[in-house]
Amino acid sequence: QVQLVESGGGLVQPGGSLTLSCAASTTRFAINGMGWYHQAPGKERALVAAITSGGTSTVADSVKGRFSITRDNAKNTITLQMNTLKPDGTGVYYCAASYEDTLSNFDFWGQGTQVTVSS
Figure 1 (cartoon, helix red, strand yellow):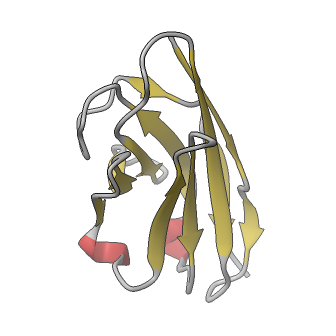
Figure 2 (cartoon, rainbow, N blue to C red):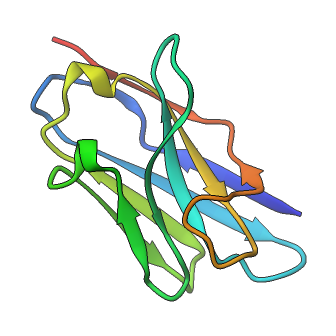
């Protein structure tokens, strides 16, 4: 199975920056696709950014130019750099992973980390 451990959430003022990290461990196959989802209060979970082990990545249009995703394959870790945060960025951010070469269809999920954007 796959275990995902997120870190880096917290309280940040509008316009500020925050970095989220997700470390994955697997006991079976190598992890390929990994990504971050955002669930705002009262809303459904939505993809923010994702990246494959080959380096193919995607970022949601709503955060393009402000958020970026990177990956360290040796450490099975992804990082979401969030800049110029807005209040609508508040919510729980979930790390997701898959054995498949995918940017949107994930099988494993972390517990989530809370991000609050408020003054």
